Image (cartoon, rainbow, N blue to C red; front, top):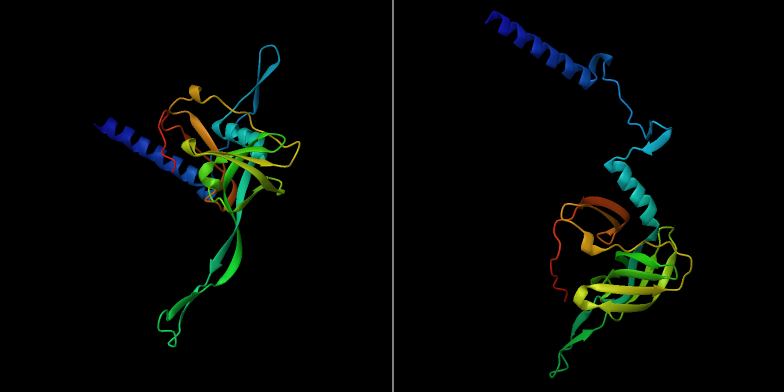
Amino acid sequence: MKAQKILVGISALVLIIGAVVSSGKFGFSWPKIPIPQTITIPGDEKVKVVTEESVVIDVVDKVSPAVVTVGITQTKRIGDILEFDPFDPFSPFQRRPGKSQKLEQDIGSGFIVGSDGLIVTNKHVVDVPDATYRVITKDDKTYDVKKIYRDPSNDLAILKIEANGLPTVEMGDSDTIKVGQMAIAIGTALGEFRHTVTTGVISGVGRGIDAG
């Protein structure tokens, strides 16, 4: 029984020392062991060591130049005024139009699939028929959208801008996607923050959509 108490006391002491060292107090800390970027196997052949972080960074560096921000320009009338005319018994209340204001804002994301200016986005991003749209690339160049092709049933849209030599992304095969696979999203989050990156997993496949 006495030996058991001694072992418990030693274990507690080791845990306390480890906690103090880990906290960095008194100038003590565990040495940081760097993760090697490459390892050498017999035959002097170098193999790259990858982590989840390095994979995400590599994908973002490769793909983000082909991800664009989609912006909208539209004219809205604001400040309508309701007037009362006591000398007009038939229509004493009349609405006087307010001022027209030109509004510009970022509304979504897209990606370039053709170096000559072919861009894929969602139909709901460009669903205002009387508005004009623009595309902003990662290097902050702005292009006017010349043509829009909309597919409401699949919530897809193809935009055409006048440009050449643009970076592109390679389309994948959705039939090979599996639930649980890692996914990386790059784009303009909430229509406000450009070139945002986030990660997650494929939560489901084969699900239908209802696009109005």
